[in-house]
Image 1 (cartoon, one colour):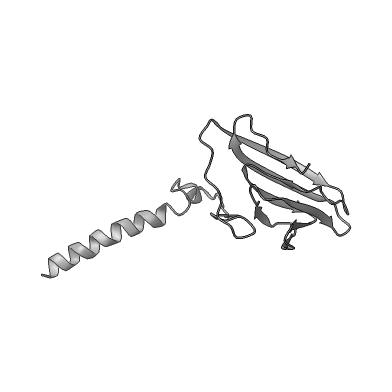
Image 2: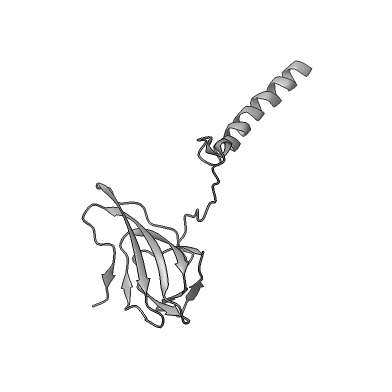
Amino acid sequence: MKRLALAIVFLLIIPLESQISRAHDGHGAESLGVKIERLANSTRQWDGALLPNYPQGQPEIKILRINIPAGVTLPWHYHPVINAAVILDGTLELHLRNGTKKRYESGDTLIEVVNTLHSGKAVGSKDVDLIVFYAGEKGQKTTILKE
């Protein structure tokens, strides 16, 4: 009976250990001194809604570094593709039509709203410098201005 209990415990521990080793994709780089910091990991947009499904066509990744001058308010627009950003410098305030707003500072990450009209403003005296990662379909626009 003790052997059976030990075997069950052992079988339960093996999957747990493999899950722990995959916590950072299981590539083992940490043993070489590589440091990994998770900046974002979510199935939700900054407004709390679930992210939409990816498109069915050929995926296309676009990475842009964007600078928004201090005090500038971006026009109302939406993104038909999933995208996320890292704020390198400055303060960005995002707004939805319903009055919802959220502020992001240097070092923050955000998972942008998709197919939702919004605007942003570089608040404070510094320009906003950010890198945005878009994950869409080949040839698809990443930003559409409100007409």
